[in-house]
Amino acid sequence: MNTSVDFCGKIFKNPVITASGTFGSGQEYSQFVDLNKLGGVVTKGVANVPWEGNPTPRVAEVYGGMLNAVGLQNPGIETFCNRDIPFLQKYDTNIIVNVCGHTKQEYLDVVERLQQEDVDILEINISCPNVTAGGLSFGQDPKGVEEITKAIKKIAKQPVVMKLTPNVTDIKEIAKAAEAGGADGISLINTLTGMKIDINRRSFVLANKTGGMSGPAIHPIAVRMVYEASHAVNIPVLGMGGIMNADDAIEMILAGASLVSIGTANFVDPTTTVKVVEGIEEYMRKYNVSDIKELVGAVR
Amino acid sequence: MSEIFREQVKILSNEKLSAGVYSLELETKNIAKNAKAGQFVTVYCKDSSRLLPRPISLCEIDSKKNTIRLVFRTVGAGTKELADYKAGEELTVMGPLGNGYDLDKFDANKKALIIGGGIGIPPMLQVAKDAKCQKEIVAGYRNKNELFLYKDLEAVAKVHVATDDGSFETKGTVIDAIKEKSLQADVVFACGPMPMLKALKMYCENNNIECYISLEERMACGIGACLGCVTKTKKKDHHLNVNNTRICTEGPVFDAREVEI
Figure (spheres, helix red, strand yellow):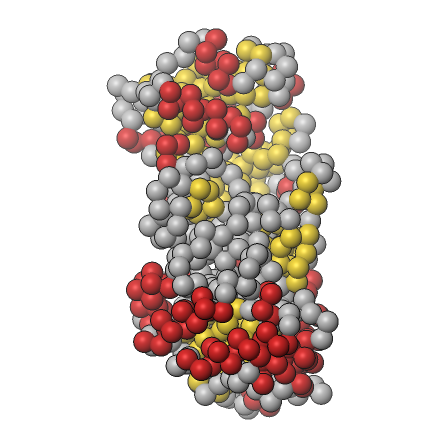
């Protein structure tokens, strides 16, 4: 039984990786999970300089999901390179660095700094709904997506995966724009912009007013978008959005994802990632699937 | 970082203490043996539409019987679900989480005021039990009908009460009670609503009293990964490299001088 996946020229021992922002750089979850068992770890978004993020409250629960408006707080690329990359290099797992910025130049500064680092893939976050500049504003316009993808590809030493927002009219157009810009792959979906109001206080629950919704309630939307995007492009797709267990992960793979990210489910059960790995193997045994590649996009 | 356990625990009792305030006694496998005053656990709901575990402070820890007591107020659907559980049922709980109070630092020569406000009172019971120094308790309630844990606290140390409406002892805040009774202290341990903690931080700074406060914030992961719960800090945080810090891992107890609340 072969669970390994070739994604953008990198071999993943299995298709299960983490979703950026939910898993730090793996250190906290390494108390619960053997990181060697994961296909890869996607680190929390990192910028050229430290970001303090948004005021609190930053998180709120909603029915079947949660909202977050952390605002991409991060320690900056230097600290990240000196501390977090060496930590992850101790493990036999791929390192995918999520990159964020307010401006094109800030993204490029991070990508340039990462040229000298031994990491496997860059995931470019052009889809965060919780920052005022950058983030989402790049990701909602096909021209903007193509342009920033091109600029990053010009200097990146590692394969580039563009992380797309679901907060668009037509995900296919955005996916095609990333491909036209030279992206090696795309990942989706980032969170859906949501809002929660406290009716007793008559105020917004999140200090940021809006936040990105994640969790099982968004899973069907994610499956639909991964399906649409994977049919619109010829580059591989990293699928995520509300995956809580192996069944959800397999659904995402059948829709067209070569890799899957586990995000919010880590908060529900810190061992979700390894349970998904085991559950996928069980499914493959049950249905006599010899190679996981047979499942990718198998439902057309 | 001490070891964190995520385990199935048995509910030994679930008792209503006053309107909307409940007391859960739980039999744990490893959590009680490893916990200290001021730490918390996160409790998972059985209704899977409620994803995030609820952070609840440890009101009492019995390491010999391996039990913990959680006293909480029902504020939303999740805590209402917890209030409905019956003895004999099982729950998933993760902990112990956070740092807790450093009580060993203060010996019998020091005098502590142990202060709780509202649903910040429960963790102060274990603090009062474990503090080796001279101690008195100040508890702030809404009114005389809400004196949950009063008897438990009284069994440990002298208790002074402030009520919002003056229906029991001092009318006003815990600070009003401290002033009215001229209570003196070398150190304050406190947990309660933000306005109370802000007032105590200022009171202690003005009176040169050491002050340790336990902060509350909406949390997601509870283990320091998601950065959902942070508080602003005077100094740059060693891990985050900015002027804020994670309440779930670096706190919830902070030296009041070090946080900007």
